[in-house]
Amino acid sequence: MTDRVRLQKFIAASGLCSRRKAEAIILEGRVKVNGTTITKLGTKIDPKIDQVTVDGQLIKPPVEPTYLVYYKPRGVLTTMNDPQGRPTILDFLRQKGLFPEGTRVYHVGRLDKESEGLLLLTNDGELTHGLLHPSKKVEKEYIVTVTGAPSKGKIARLEQGVTIQGKLTQPCSIEKIRGYPDRTTYRVRLREGRKRQIRYMFRAIGHKVVRLVRVRLGPVTISGLRPGDVRPLTRHEITALRRAVSCKDRSPSSCKSRQAD
Image (cartoon, rainbow, N blue to C red):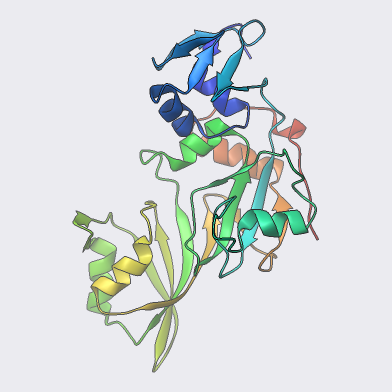
């Protein structure tokens, strides 16, 4: 790191949270530098000298980056903690011995409880911020099975954009894979990430999603993984992701990778 860096970038690079979240907690007045509350975005600090705390917790210098791709099973919540005690992705990862207490890695985006497939897990706050930012439009690919047999006209409507929750969806690509009298499976490619978007899209044309699997995020796929499996990203995948969101190189060759069986 350079001598002085932006406060939100330092917090994100420490692995505490994403840069977007870091900006939010600064504005909420939860961050102090050398005992002084900071609420101005863009404030710069010297990580070697200044002490940064969030809610009274001392923030340590940036940790070595970790990049994993996880096949989230159906029925598991995309969260690290659930007050109701329901199964979470952290529970599954700890069962594999990947994340002992104190380890900080976060999911990039979400899949709802009934959806399954690819989740990217990392402590690289800058990359997380880039992948979640609407302007980057990193392509995501899903295998989606719906009830019935939507007409070509209905699918064309979805590709052009439909209004869900009061907002028009962006154009996307929908390719039919196979069909049966009672259900049809499609390959859906889109560059948005709105909550439960695909389910709402097909509901808008009168068809219910019965299975949804995210199989790709940009250059990263779940090829070869089964539900619950985890693997480290390759150097090529990390570099390609960072290029897609215009992040500076963080030396993927030194990334900490953890393998699960």
